[in-house]
Image (tube, rainbow, N blue to C red):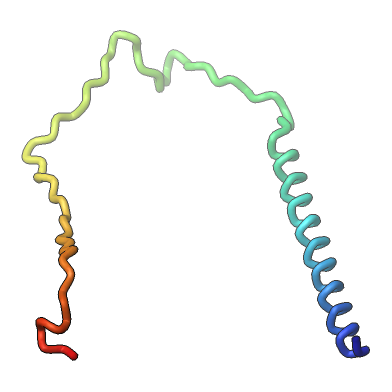
Length: 94
């Protein structure tokens, strides 16, 4: 094996080690960011409804869906697959 071949292999080994190290660092940073995001920093404050501003819905109110009038018909795209074999000799091709 010539010294040039050994130099080329050594280069590829160094590149592989560098890629693996940077990949590990990248995913470690992602894991650290996710761990920080999942831990609560402080207790959440519960908001209560005041008597002057009512943003809640009373329990006696029912939500009904809106009925749509003149809905367009569904259009389906169909493809035509012709699986017949065409023999070229019948069509004049050599």
